[in-house]
Structures are given as structure tokens and as C-alpha cells.
Amino acid sequence: MAKNNKFHLQCKSCGETIDNFTDWFAHGQKCPKCGCIQADVMYYEDFSNLVKMVKDPYFKPRSVWDYFNFLPLLNRDNIVSEGYEGVNRIDNWTFFEDYAKRKYNINIKVYAHRQDTNYATGTFKDLAGTVVASVLKENKVKNYVGASTGNIGVAYSRYLAAAGISLTLFIPESSTKTQEAEVSTYGQTLYRVKGDYAAAKKMAKDFAQKHNLILTGGNFDPMRLEAKKTMVYEWLRVLPHFPTVFMQAISGGSGPLGIAKSCKELEHLNVFDKMPRFILPQPHRCAPMAEAWENAKKNNFPQGWEKEYPIYENPETTIVTLATGNPNAYPPLAKLVKESEGEIISCVEERAADVTRLVAYETTMRVGPAAAITVVGFLQSLRQRTIKEGDVVMLNIGESTWRSPEYVAGLSYSTQTISSLDQTELIDRSSYRQRLWEAIETI
Ligand SMILES: Cc1ncc(COP(=O)(O)O)c(C=O)c1O
Ligand SMILES: [Zn+2]
Image 1 (cartoon, protein in one colour):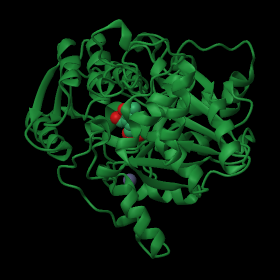
Image 2 (cartoon, rainbow, N blue to C red):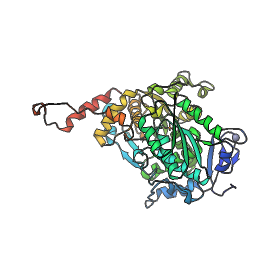
Image 3 (cartoon, rainbow, N blue to C red):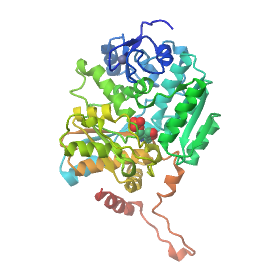
């Protein structure tokens, strides 16, 4: 494929230009000059046109594809979409604003980016699904290979199926039966690898090499980052204030990398003061980035601090979608967190159910396990005072409980088993509220 007049890729390390995705794939998704696996997609369209678009009250996007000029696709005919990707509800969670005022005497705004309203898989991985499937289709890719702990695998399975592309997916031993079945029902091939996520990734890499196929690009994949950056466009379009804090549970870390790319692209246009602080929670049984960050902070960020991180073999987290034990995105991600004056924190996994119950009680939205870690992290950050007076907090709620029946099974709290009518009483649902709030007091 020749040069095009819409975009090119640029190596983040040496600045080399790669003309298009065909060349990027042909070079093994690396810079042909220096071998770096990180590249930014650079657009020729002026981003002030994007700002005009999002500030136009009559602009009502139906999916991220209404941001076509800022996505790495040349021909709209190649769009693979189930509709609505990335155009989600952003709810104002006033019950947490009241809590922050009541308990910590601070005034904050709290928004929940309801990515569970993505239609195809009910997770924010629909964004990557639609963009990756479309770019692969445009570049005539017929087979794709990947490893996944869950959500991204399901999203790729569905979107690639819609594009007629075969996916071979390697999942770790601990992946749930539900995730496995979801992939399988789209007619994609699945291998459950005896071992952890790192073992599944290694197997996927070897398989791709053996058959000379394209492997999913991981957390630095420019296609994925381009998809996720559109979250910022939606904040600009919908919210009265730009977030000062962005929170998302991290596994590999591609979410915040995408947000940062977007902020850097738009920063000269004066549509926000500065990039939000990234406060990124991990579940405590798989928190290598939080551990590394804590150590670096304790030692006052010595020279080369970002290159020091532990690797967990077979992390036994109960939040299986967040089971990245070898966090190879840590160096750039941690630098970004520091630049933003943010934090990476470890959160007790067992508290996830408490926040899911409370949020469901207050809003009827059921926060899935990975997203619940985001909410636990929010409450923890309030206590640690890293969320401050005047903050506008954006919680990326990346999934509902939809695909985690095992998690749902552990959530009920208002049941009693009875054998006679005498054992029953009429209970007002408001009587449960206090118990639910008490449960989160100690987070
Ligand atoms: C709901 C949800 N939240 C967060 C994550 C972590 O995403 P990342 O670290 O790639 O940004 C995932 C990844 O699978 C997820 O499914
Ligand atoms: Zn390079």
C-alpha cells in the first residue's frame, strides 16, 4: 500500500515514519529502523476541526466512527461495527459526591463512564474490537492471533467474526468457562494453555511465528490506543468540566496510554487546563505495577526507577481480567503517571463485591469485577487524600456483571431461606442502605 493523505505512523523512539498499517504489519509491528514497538498514528487533519465537532450541540455521534477523520482507516466501507461503540452514558454519581463531602469535607464531582453500555460485549473492549477489526479488514488480513484473560478476547472474537477474519486465541488456565464459551460461540479457535497469562502470550507468539501470522499488538498496539483515545472526545462533547482525575483498573495499561495520547494531541487547543492525574488501581493479588510504584516512591524515584518492576508468575487474582503478572507497559505508563502527578495503587480484591452491591443499590448499575476495582480504588484514594477539593473524577467503568455469573453468584445479601409464612416480614428496601454504606466505610 502506498502513502496516504490521512495518516502515517511515527516511531516513538527514533521518529521514523511508517507509511501505513500494511507496512507496520510487514515489519512485525515494529519500527523498521530501531525495532521499537511503540508508534503513534499521526493525522494530517487539523485537530481544531475535532474540537469544533465536539462542541457543536447538534453533533450526536452514533459510534466512534463519527470521529472517522481521527481514526486510522482510509475507506469507510471497511468499517466493522455493531453500532454504538464508544458513545456511552456518562453518569454523575452524586451519592459519592455526597459521601466525599460528608466524610472528608471535600467538594468533588464524580462521573462514571458507563462503558458497560457498549452493545456488543458490554465492555470497553468493544472500542478496540471495532477499530482493530476494521483496520485488519482494510489491510486484507485473514488470520489474527492473540492471548487474552477475557474481555479483549471476546471483543476480538466477535468483531473479527463480523469481518470474516479467523482468530486463534490463547487463554490462561484460570480464564472462566463463560469467557471461553463466548469466544467459542463466535466460531473462533481457542486454546486453554496450562499456565498463566504470560504462558498464554508466549504460546500465541510462537504460534504466530510458526504460521507467519499477525499477532495482537499488546498494550502498545497503535490500533488499540487510537480506539481508546476517543474516550477523551466524548468527555469534551458531553461534560461541563474536563476531568482532573482519571481512574481505571489496569492490567496491561492500554486505557491510560490511549487517554494520554489524546490529551497530548489536543493540549495546544486550550480545551482543557491539563491532562488528568492518572490514579490507577490494581487488584492486590496481581499488583506488580503498584508494587513497583510504591518502591520507586519510597526511594524518591532514583535514576532509571521506571525500569524496575517485579514479574509475578501465575498470579492468583480472583479478578481474572486483570491478571497481567508481567507488566511490560510499566516503564512508559509509570512515567506518564508521574508526569500527571498520579498514583498506582493496590486494592483489596475482596472489597469489590461491597462496592458492586452499593452502586447497584444506589443506581441499579451493576459494576463488574474489574470495574469494581476502579471503584474500590476511588474510595481508597479519598481516604488517602489523593483525591482533593475541587477534583472532577472520571471513573472508567469498563464492564458490568453481565459476563461474570460466578461473581454475581456471590453478591446476594437480602435472602433468607424459610419454611413457613411466620418467618417472613415486610421489609422496606431502604433498611438495607445503612448496611451497604457501612460495608464501604472501611475501604
Ligand atoms: C473492565 C476492564 N477494566 C480494565 C481492564 C484493564 O485494561 P488495560 O489495563 O488494558 O487498560 C480490562 C482489561 O481487560 C477490563 O476488561
Ligand atoms: Zn524507530
